[in-house]
Amino acid sequence: MNQELLNNLGKLVLRLGSGALILTHGIPKISRLFGEGPIRFSDPFGLGPAISLSLATFAEVICAVLIIIGLKTRLASIPLMITMLTAALYAHADDPFGTKEKPLLFFVLFLGTLILGAGDYSIDGINNNKKRSLF
Image 1 (cartoon, rainbow, N blue to C red):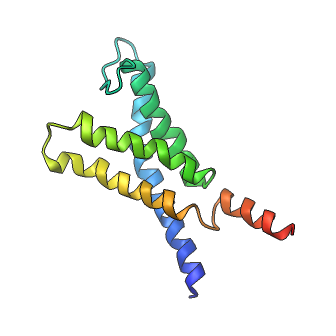
Image 2: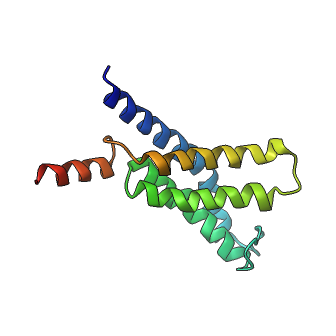
C-alpha cells in the first residue's frame, strides 16, 4: 500500500472512531436538554446550566456528526476540544486521574483531527479534490 492511501485510511479511522465514540456521550444529553424538570449540569463559564448543557450537546452531537462525515472537520474539532478540556479540568477537577483520562484522551484525538484534517475520504476531501481539478 502506498503512503498516501495509508495516511487517508488513518485519518478516516481517527474521524469515524472518535466521532462515533463521542456521539455516544452526546445523544443522551439531548434527552437531558429537553427532559422535564430543572437542568442539572456543570456551569464552568457562568452561562447557566441550560446553556452549558446546550453547548456540550452541540459539540458532542453536531460537531461529532460533522467529523464523522468529514465536513468542516478542523473547525468542528475545536468545540469538542474545548468541551473535553472543560470536562477534564472543571467538571472532574476533584476526581482521580482515571476519571479525567477519558476526556483528555478525547481531547488528544480531536487535536490530532485538527492537525491532520479530514483526509481524502471525507466531504472536505471531495471538495478539495474538486477545487484542485478545476485548475
